[in-house]
Image 1 (cartoon, rainbow over the protein chains, first blue to last red):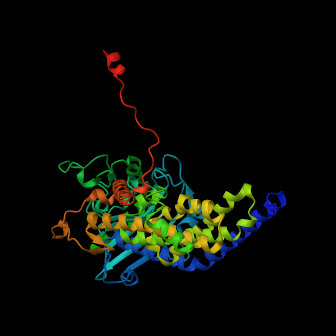
Image 2 (image 1 turned 135 degrees about the vertical axis):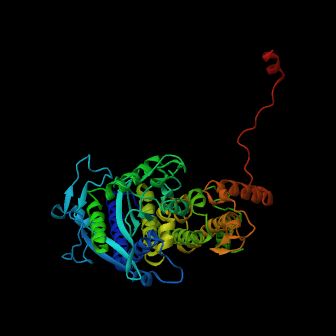
Image 3 (image 1 turned 30 degrees about the vertical axis):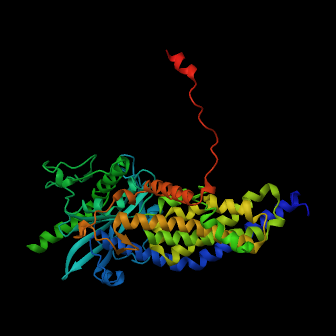
Amino acid sequence: MKNNDTISKTLIVAVSLCLFCSAVISFTAVNLKDIQEANVRLDQQKKILASANLLDDEKSIEELFLNIESKIIDLRTGKYDTSIDLSSFKESDFARDENTSIILSSEQDIATIKRRENYQKVYLHYKDDAISAVILPVRGYGLWGTLYGFLALEADLKTIVGLEFYQHKETPGLGGEVDNPRWKALWKGKKISSETGEILISVIKGSVNKDSPDAIYQVDGLSGATITGNGVSNLLNFWLSDLGYGPYINEMLTKRSSSDV
Amino acid sequence: MSKAKEVLLNPIFNDNPIALQILGICSALAITGSLYPTLIMCVALTVVVSFSSLLVSLIRKHVPNNIRIIVQMTIIATLVMLVDELLQAFDYETSRTLSVFVGLIITNCIVMGRAEAFAMQNGPWLSFVDGLGNGLGYSVILIFLAVIKELLGAGTLLGFEILPLVQNGGWYVGNNFLLLAPSSFFIIGLLIWALRAWKPEQVEVPQYTIAKNSLNSEERVI
């Protein structure tokens, strides 16, 4: 048998194998990219619908999504912004760009997201021509990585319909239980803030005492996942504060009260 | 029995990678909670192990000895990434359920073991069949686990209700423990017991036996 152990043979085999394998992988990755992205988009739409409890087995996601309108808002003013094209909006690009985001100081950055984009895409669900749910994208750091999700609020913008994460790196079985339907069901009907507008929603350690006056703002912690729970509390508190959707929520509420008059 | 047939069928019961060699336990524990993802995982592993054996065997005469493990790993990793890409494109839901476990096929000892122990010494066809056989051996155990876990844990099979659960107005109280990963230890343990009772030649010779207490030790205590 030939001697394979010479340096030149080793290099030739290693290099050609690497080239061949990377060519195969790149070829597949490039060719499948469109289908994969379509899947991710569909999954995102599904999560948006799920956060507002709108999933229906009999209807397709596309069909259900027809009742949802997406709009870009300016997080600084809380007003809708029509100058940005909806399809070109990408949260991660805007958050990275210096011109479209702000740096958060360490006291501000309770959700550990470093930069906050100035624009966000929100989703409005209409039922009989009236807004029935407002779905807000949220994100923040848990234990191992950033959790990305959607918070759905009722039209009063105080009551939670649901919270759904579409991407996270939490430990399966512990922090990963943020995906557990039983835990997610606990969010329904909770209030985000007191009458005076103070944000009180939090994930507590242990179970909620039902008799406590604060029970309406509290959700049971996940056992073995205190840090993930704190992360979820922090990210909600950040995104509901004045740095997050606070101005938008105020804007919506004033608009409603003026139209009532 | 022809050599190919023997190579194909032996790993299923006589030389099962999970039950006899105790390899590839990680994914057997983690993803067997429901049957459908398990089936996809079995197909993925079988494809990877058979084609990696085939490819390793094809180039085995040109692989320098000191980089052979890396060469095998590269081939296995490429195949795993291919499978992962395909899953993400054509079965996104399952790919999310299996999450890291598809990627972890790279480190599944069955794949590496077959490449190093069989494909480096045998021809491409036989290596392919050997990979296929080991993939099937792995699949038999995983499907067995998943059927028990999903049926007795959640009362369903492939998502269809077989045993109506009490929560849904039926009579069956689901065993939640079976839906968790540790239950696989018990099921695999019982399975190995059953298999070795059926085929006693699989029982290993004990490495040592505990010596009987000598009379002296009793006296010494006193």
